[in-house]
Image (cartoon, rainbow, N blue to C red; front, side, top):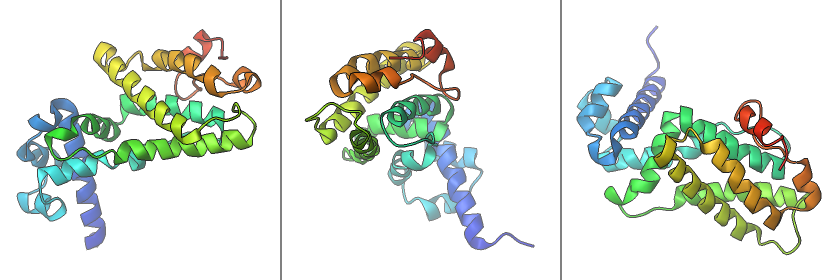
Length: 216
């Protein structure tokens, strides 16, 4: 039985996105030619342009797929889940090429179109949701502007991962996240909440958790 046309189209589109992510991850936007992507995906020019009308449109699709490309940790919403999310994102950056390429394009996007902060705002919204839950659980200090801190956290995380990528290919990102949280948490979390938090998890950065004594 032949594959349904819609399923085949979805599979082809995903193959193009993954191929584009791999080539962009290796060469950046400027070095990622359509021919390289087509060859990697194993599609014809007609198949490519059926799904993406231009290289710019393809790059935009990779960049804005960050939320869908990442698996985030389970658990009750709140401060611990926010911390866990940060370590899971670090793990995804090291292993998930679609996510990694999307993050790279968010930095390089001036090369293929006007700057678009959608990806950053989406992460701020994710973080804000966890902060709202943390506030409801009494984990945060009073009079904290949750939206402001969500945006500060996105900025701090972005800078941390870029620095880590430049210095170690993100190998030291978990350790850098421990340092980031050690300075940020006293400004936003209650002493009791800080005492109960752990850095990293069994699935993301166990060595960091042990090195930090499991506590912040």
